[in-house]
Amino acid sequence: MRFKTGKILTVVCRAKGPSGKVRELGAMIDPNYELCAMLRNDAAPLGYPSVTFRPEDWEALNSEEVASVQSFRGVELGTLIRLQELSVGRLRARDVQAIVLKAEFPMMMPVSMVIGQSFLKNFRLVVDHAKGFFTLT
Image (cartoon, rainbow, N blue to C red; front, side, top):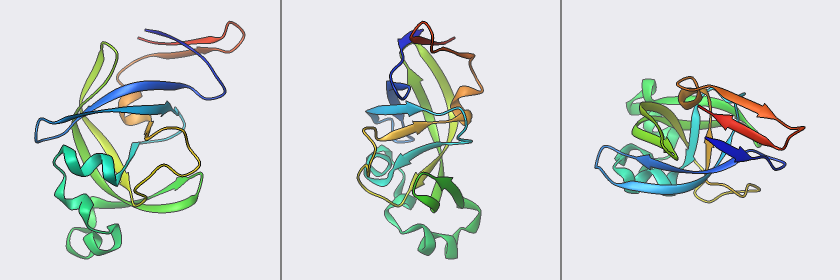
């Protein structure tokens, strides 16, 4: 799939949770980010009850489901989940690891999700800034 580049690589994606519900989200592709990251208000309706807890509270019960990540806001604690499916256009990956950040609404970002290597490792990403596009195959 071919996309026009802007200052950031943005796409629309569809995230599917264990409940079978799907959310369509504006996303930024960041190949330097290890995991996909999403916000709590987008993850909870997909069927992840663990994200309704603050990560620091959930960590006391399930430490293996909580991790720290470096983001544009500094080091953040989040809850680890596995998306049943994540798709960008016709490209789909199953069982995609993601981290749900504590923030409920996008802060300083025009997107609700960051698509990182946990999704991108399933595909080939080529960016051509000179021609103004990127491809994901």
